[in-house]
Length: 377
Image 1 (tube, rainbow, N blue to C red):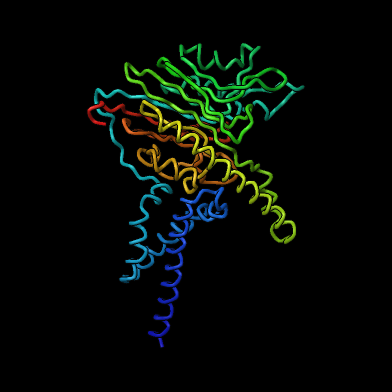
Image 2: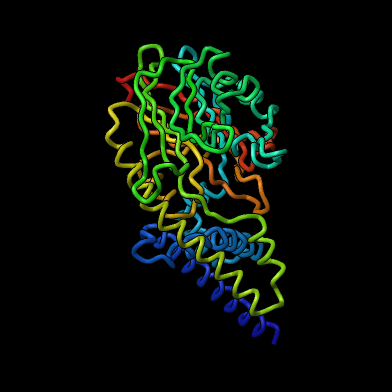
């Protein structure tokens, strides 16, 4: 009787493990599907971390049982290692080679320095602590999304406070907005000379939209590196949307309404970002120089957007970081939506997510890049 029960239990767990492996397979396949072609694939890919975690738990279970059936989750684990690396990066510290030519890049969505969180008599109040933290960071290059600079203000003229005061070069892709005529958009600051720069305005966005990419060719002691600062289409999900969905649990009609609202916004974002990343990659792949592509991509590592970038470029967190590397500072935990990618001719070291700077809804990320001699490329 005990043996029969044991066999039934084993078959049940084996069946469940098999279903999880199939879930992994379907999720990986959905990463390849453009959301504009079949948008439900985006939601399946979004669920892939759940399958990866469950498969790992099954692996532990079969190991503890000392069963040969561990072959199934172990095979899935080995074959899907690249996707596990997207979920949790594991890298042992390596020193920058002595005498190497390096470039430290910091990327940060500064959330307009919180200019609109507190408004007194129509005048935005800016977070000077965040401005000073950015200005004093030792990075060679800064890629700042949702940048804000007040034109007619000594205190909040951030072109001067972050750039001119420290002798940094800049390329700005901004629009003038709000009643105090502030510059809003993307800015690249550099310790090294900027030779040339430009803006990629995505076809599916308005000319004044913050969703765009700026690029700058930077002369690093005789070698040129092209740096992109990117801000892709937002998820357009606010904290209250999530709170409303949670609070609607138990009320079937209300829950359906809130869930559909979230799903509609996610679907729209999947489709928009998929088109934007193709425009971005076309530009990157035409670059005559090694490229670093960083910014707020508004998509997790298990998305079509990220997958397309990962096909063409290396990810700095995966190659030189550790842990989950969550960059979203909000109600949803573990989201890594800010990234740095890089092309051949470069190697990433010392990737960091700066949790000490928690004044924005994103955490800053930085990495040091070694410029490889052309003979090694």
